[in-house]
Picture 1 (tube, helix red, strand yellow):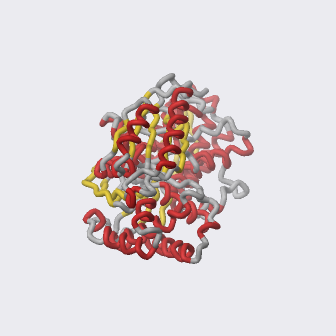
Picture 2 (spheres, rainbow, N blue to C red):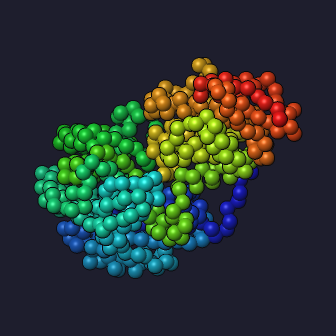
Length: 500
């Protein structure tokens, strides 16, 4: 049974950017943010700011109309708290204060006009909230500016803002890619934040870079359509950026239908900026993040205790609470597999344990699905889940662990080959092992709490035993023994059931 959302517990962020104006409503202010509504309008507020110093009148009218709708939606949805921010176009335009005054009257909230360093910091906090232990340079490319900032785990260093957003660069260069190339080169060559990026990760934040990632995902035939956490090597990203520039020169970008018409002309400028960032910073990997300024703003408002929680575990606990038959049973399953790992001396890193615990929390979320489709449907739910702090490889591992729990380990019930290819053979073996353990645990307990704590593991030579307390003796059956022996074989043991 799902828990009803408390009235007034939701929070919203109105983000007035240089290219888009967006409303995102989240279920609540929490470590794992759950968006329940997300809408944007591509207004282009910043398209003429560099040349005229003004927000374009038609863009202002479009933005104010959108803000009226957003405020009405917040009333209809009974949003508890609304936060509003504005970025480069509004802080740089001479008529920005007049626009903000009108916008505040419509939204009925104070709008924070972010300074460049403040915007960079919030972008970094957004990446921290959505990437587990990030280490690299965050680059937030908006319509009006590019923010660059160094982040290491939870530590944020000073940031810089540059007038290299897609609309600003197009305006400065008078729509000449040759001029734009020179401007980007001059702006980026001596940026100290980029000099610290060698061999690390570059986290690409912003709608136009996400559009580049979407094109790359489709063209490469990649099995996941999830944008957040999509990762490619810097060399591959550099080659892709250059190919996009060649397409632009041949006037072929108009054929890319998966990108909004208003954003399509900016793809080339985004590719150009990314190309020069790779050249100067020399990162190892490019990771695309859908978590940015908005998520950073809300992450900042959490208590320190909440900020320090693991975002993936929080998301898994939420899904466990909402979708499992017993949330307590999933937590008992964590302790049960902890005992199994100790007895069989399973070699695990801290990250391995984190993913095992996540899989335990998600091991029963597909029980309402028809039995014939529980494996594939739960796999899809996990790998496409709208949560962060997990890589695509980790999504595949957790998803396949739960798939095997439902579908079994037989050859005729295998997951898609494209999903298996995201894992190494060792990772795939571990997912099968975890799925086999879930099959034993859920068969014993029927997903009810209080049962697993009454079973224990014992190891004797090459034999692995599952010991049942006397009160559970009637639960033991041939099927339990068969599944446990299958589990034992995966750790090169002979399995047996013991009644105490």
